[in-house]
Length: 602
Ligand code: C2O
Image 1 (cartoon, rainbow, N blue to C red):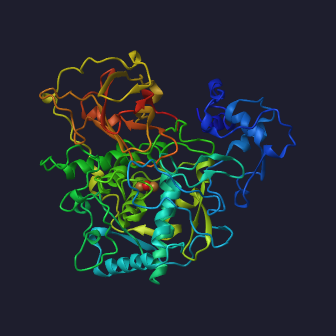
Image 2 (cartoon, rainbow, N blue to C red):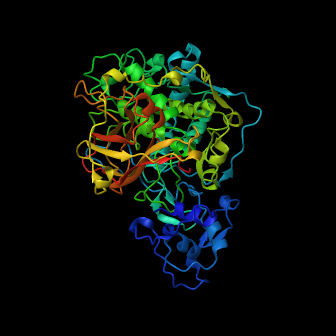
Image 3 (cartoon, protein in one colour):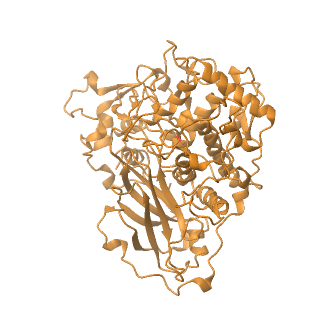
């Protein structure tokens, strides 16, 4: 168990379970302080940086922290403990000297540098201020840009490329931000907190806010470079049939040295190929023309059926002290699906590290990365618009107060918090052509199975209770999983039935993908597996290679079952048949648990 569960067990009473106080034995934890030190010993105090003062008392007794984290010592003072434990992830104030070279486990040539730390201009960190009196920057669909928009955008990128490498606004430095935050540039120092544990902004609830801030400054820097305070980024509108190809302006052009072109891309995936949002196998061989429809299903799953609450959408709780080997609750629905698919589809699969987009250390070197992420960010807005007031950001302080440090457009160093990222009107940007009632995928729920095509009953397979977990995903795994019975107060429509795949342990340096099908082979007419275009597809779990120093990473994924069971005509069954289908990089992947939950507490 990670310390985040411990946090809630101290600060709330309802979730208090005795087994949350288990002793930790994880050696990656970076806590090596003995319990016997005297209270006055300086080693026991965590000194927080200036900018953290609002969140926590400046000095926290490290031994209290230890009690909560490991149950190693006797809990003396629970009230100081509860405040001590609330440590959101924070980038150190000094982003240069506290940064270390990134690392990847390369299987060959490295195309980009691993020296990803930002330059120092000797400035101290400033608090963030919302822009005042500005017009809203209206981000536009990349395939529909006017000549003027495209020209401006190219000029801005050209100007960025022309800056010297050690300028904080240079193309290289902007790309390096991603590398530093994703490939181990920063550790969870927060004073002397967890200097051995690296920060990772992926596979957790930091994913959306971190990337929103990253683009926020990137866009403002580009605007400044061409002296245009209204400059707005394009977004790659891959969720619309008209925008599913790589937008034309990013392609190679022999008449022009196109600043938007990047050579490290998969040459097979030029227009007219459509992006493959579920990484459907054999896209290149499959001549059937259902890619477009299938993509819309994927976006629908990512934003609707698999995104019923903030944890499903944003990803699981991640706070200081949680290392890459600790089980994280889950990776968000968009992140592990369409987001990852676009990275891998664009990156050059003929290179061992799939530069640029196919590896986190290099992704920022392709201008497409930022327009892809603008659309990912737009998904956040659209998800909120789907159910206003219900689809909302986490309200946990550990989410609200997580923070990062960026160079802004004035070359000042600014600390920004998740809590300030939620309202894009205050950040003065928005998305054109993004009316939630007009988006193409809004009604793209997969078509219901024709009952005539179905076998009368589900196939008989092993029960999940007969398996010894963790189990290796080196072949297709199929289990019967019993569904919890709904009590009367769980009948409500907002009590969702969720399939959780927990303890997914995988090689962080590999491109990893597996698919999850529920009640497949209901269609018994042929012996083929269903595809991501079928209603039996619950979703996928895909990972961009990025991690290095730890071989294995752990995550989890949650899938909504309500619509799926309806669409496969299996709503009345007592159990479901879950199939995990390995696709890529799963040779040493293991799964720790498969279960179905009703209206899980988030
Ligand atoms: Cu930081 Cu698309 O990843």
